[in-house]
Length: 104
Image (cartoon, rainbow, N blue to C red; front, side):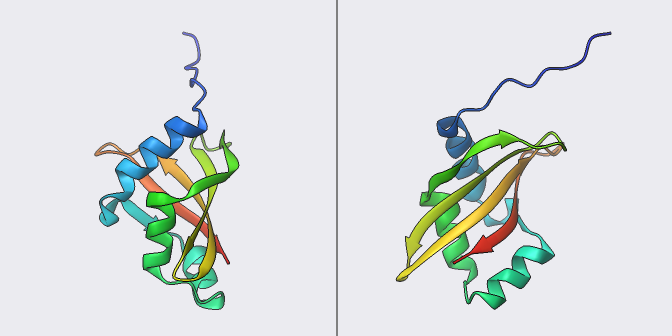
């Protein structure tokens, strides 16, 4: 048996998939680290969701060692520039957006 190869995901394809996932906030998982950084940096959930839905990529999409695609997005919302590192994780019932960390 051969190994399964993952096709490269372009930034545009990553954004398209992420935005489709982020339409449903129940498909967005905030890691404990991301929640902690949100409190420290005074970033609210609405700012994070808007970044996922409308942000632009500032760190290109890349494959992690866990096999997920990850990128960092930036978006200005409510007067603040917010950066969000997010991974797209495959689940049996559909993809999940995992917010790894939040920067301001």
